[in-house]
Image 1: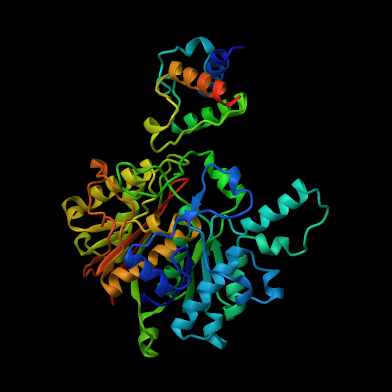
Image 2 (image 1 turned 180 degrees about the horizontal axis):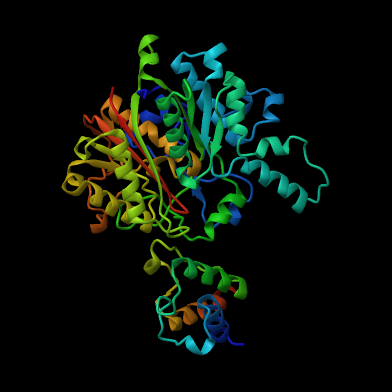
Length: 402
Length: 85
């Protein structure tokens, strides 16, 4: 079994259009959530979100490419370019044949669906652009990364709602660990901030009109974001042999199913996934210093997640830090695990723990050190990242400093 | 049908009950309606009366819509209908 390390990272999200910008924003506790701005936003009752700003698609993609790239694919390629550039890798011959891409997304090309449905149903148009299908398909982003970087090995798109990115990164990790693939590009992308997208969520009544306050007693729900996070995973041996900079090591992954409810989280399903990741990593719970929480800011998730952590870690739960960066960039749904992995890298490599913003009042059900409002300098050598999705799909990653 | 009768019918349908089983003092939980059922009932109420119900499942007690009993729901709907139509 190979040791698996991260040698490249890329992102675009509400906090920034690069990894350094995003990490700086996390360190400073900046809020990336603001007023939503798109067609028909006045008709929504939820008017806040973590939209990507300062992104000029035409500066990055020529007109021909833009005709093929939904916004979620555009985000993916921006992030993938940053990650691959940092890794210093180029893919040809045998490396190309043994390297692939696994990306997570919940909705794929929703903007394309939205625009074209509007066109045919609302505006009564009788034809749509021939590239609508290849744009909206959920594997579009994965395919375009494979095409752009010449990755000819195993590639797929994973869809498990809010756990998609963790599942994607976890599978890619397993593929490199087992030797099934030499190098893997892994992460996730989401762009669901459209009128139809938000309107669909409003009916569930779990979104906040004001802010995302994970673990706070006065939390009022989740706030959606958009963006992408992409990483280059390769073996420790390969990385060292070519003198590549290593950001962190992925040491464990676990996926479990609640088998209980289609939307409500389950403490046991979550606890089993956390324990499973520690077991897979052959780590003792005492080695974990920081947990990047799923921490959506809903009444249900935060309470259940804290209970699961208490179950798994017992007394050690009081010694570790747990924060939710969704408070800053929003809930990126299928991309959230990927962007949140950056906070894990920041903890392990830079010794900075991202804060949970918006924390106003202590909830006895969430009585852990949630790093409220201000980032903290701390040395940690073991980290886990949680994702607990609708439908009871749980995916937890364990990482170590290198 | 009055507002009261329509609301009782909606709740009965959601709980797979007869309208006679839906008593005014009952909580939705008493009637076997879980959190997803609550959200569905609110949707049905919005559709039936063409109103917007201010309800956040994360802070139900702070919503301006009192779901603590069938009677409180009926009263809340009557107020919203008067305000919004």
